Length: 307
Image (cartoon, rainbow, N blue to C red; front, side, top):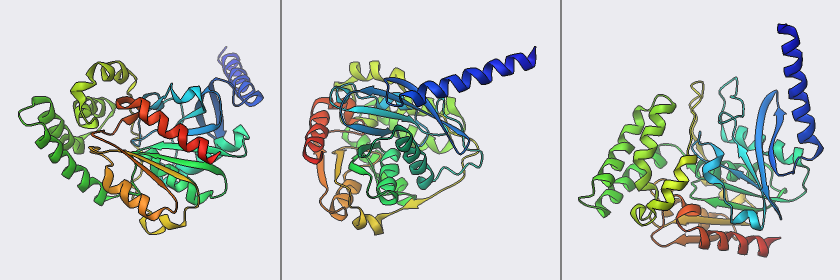
């Protein structure tokens, strides 16, 4: 009986793969195996193809879904390896080049010749690495609330910005607790503690959390996180080679972004040739939620110009 069940499961798995391979850009959920690792992605919308990579590392894809952009683009939302239904990496090597490789293999599987890459936060770092490693494949690179480094410089800047955030909202208990949550994030050990800290941090992720709280309450139900306990320590810094990027690049950032603020976006805009920078006044880290209309307009104008 056990062997029969195993055979049924194997046939079901193969059927799933075949369905995905028949039309890898059909709307819905797909999977592809890369180096023996399952990579799941979701397709929605119509128009130029855009790979979408969530942040963290460790955030599930759903929080980054952009229904307005799906009206003009075919959004291919990646479930980064180590999150959601995608497999964990056996060796724990979640480096930027490794993430970029998995995204590239999805692009090969889909079979499009030119496409866009939209990355948020850590996903923007993956996008930068993608443009460096595969320089002739992207029609455009869209960096949302991103930074060209993932090391102590970034972390120290985040702690500086959380102090400024708290000062902007004096006598606000939720703002003060968000600041404390940033400090507590150093002690996160599992999914439950990570999500608890994240929900306390949310006020700091928006330029004015209390103005958009109803919208955030509907959106945050999709927030999920997983940190592979086997993830190996890794630092990354490409500031010295940003000038070699030849891909048309759009950089989007909120004025009050605590995680990856204008300091990094300005540096990227200065160093990436021909890049465009859009700073959203009084915006935060989640501009696709807080300022969805101007965010969507900026992306659509960039795509119209580059395609």
